[in-house]
Amino acid sequence: MSRRTVWDEVRRLREEEGLTVLLTTQYLDEADRLADRVAIFDQGRIMLEGSPDDLKRAAGNVVAVALDDPGQLAEALVDPGSILNRL
Image 1 (tube, helix red, strand yellow):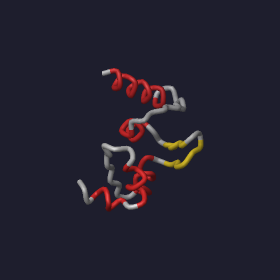
Image 2: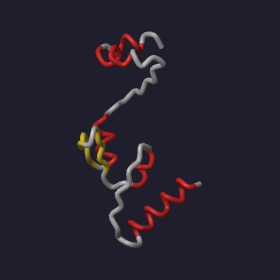
Image 3: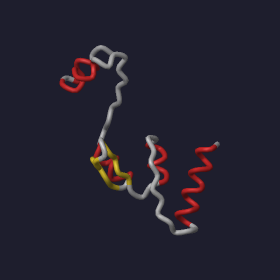
Image 4: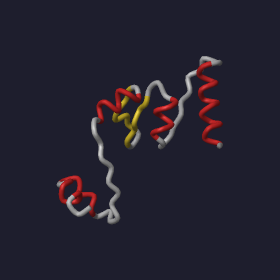
């Protein structure tokens, strides 16, 4: 409920007041629904920036894999198939 309230207020500020709203979120659905422009930061630097649709097109097909063992991350980055074959 509170998320919906925040979304409604962001939209109202933008549409009725004509304000630019800087919203930080880790929820991609919020960015997709509310933002005209999205910037993805890593360690304080902008890594990607554009409209939500532009960023989705640039990403292409993405597969997310949750690893039980964080030690598998390096292996998955070097050889993604080694992890996917175990699933």
